[in-house]
Length: 223
Image (cartoon, rainbow, N blue to C red; front, side, top):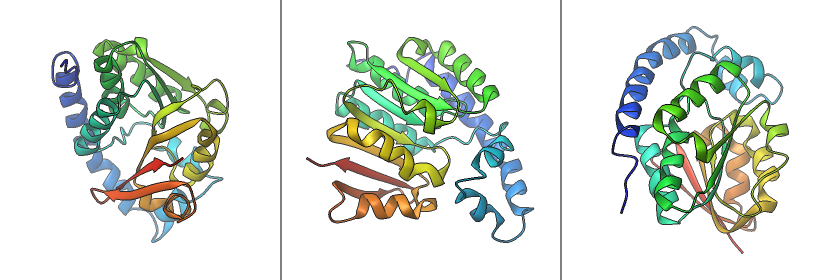
């Protein structure tokens, strides 16, 4: 069984990117601490100010955790995923994990990912090229409510939600008609999107859903 994730060039690239993200997190934490009480939560839950908020974070990697990255790779590999959609590319750390799984699953595969910040698109694209995985990834620049409203795979196997948390329910609604039965949705920092959690945890919502690792929700599309 091939393992692109733990061999060069992907493994050393991810090690460097995660180390850089750890350093950047110090500044991010200081920025958050300087905000007025409750302001961070308000901005994260806003459906009207997310562009301005995340533009202010354009130099921040905002990656998934190492454990979540490994989880994404394992889920994509174990399910034989070939059609993956990602909301929120940032510098592309999660994208690298998903694309590595597509490479190891063989027979091509397609990952559609989106990011509205142009500088992050450039950095993510460079990282994918350095990893030799750019041929598997379609990186769309712009607001996901527009970029993910067209030209998607007919049957999506796996979704990662890791962009503006307030938009999780809207992005799910865009993708839902194309989710195959058994498709998996991984939502990072899902606790910051209570409307999304209510949707996937509803008894008659069409999903089986469970928290994972304290900050991630993993859901499976039923029927």
